[in-house]
Amino acid sequence: MIGRLNHVAIVVPDLAAASALYSTGLGATVSAPVDLPEHGVTTVFVMLPNTKIELLHPLGENSPIAGFLAKNPAGGMHHVCYEVTDILAARDHLKAQGARVLGDGEPKIGAHGLPVLFLHPKDFCGTLVELEQVAA
Image (cartoon, rainbow, N blue to C red; front, side, top):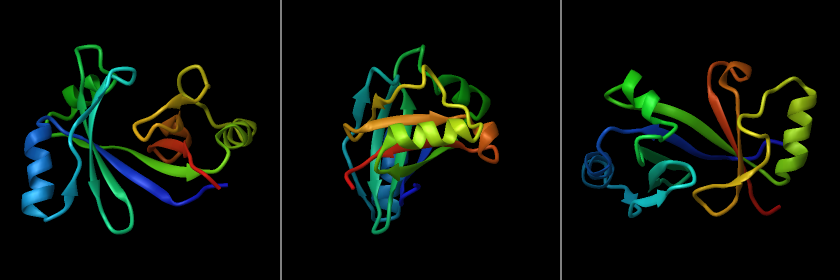
């Protein structure tokens, strides 16, 4: 069911500074910032040979990651994202195993324009897990 690691998301207090750290400091290819109002975040993707790093910054005062940044003012790892080929089958399987799906349990369109779901961190060793549906 679980596919490859799609990305690791890091919440950052300063998106421009974090982008520069990865592009200038580490020599990585970094995307332009993209606002995702439906998720309350601005994202930047750092492209790596084997995966991506997603830099997240709150978009608006009601951002779901504002509380995370308040508790972790320097930022920090927020979630890991795994690919699945059938997000509804993955959701149903995980729910049958006792995992909790956050929100209303229905996939939403994520930063890559693909369906995503988030799973409760208490069910995954303290780690927030995102599932993203990709083509088989």
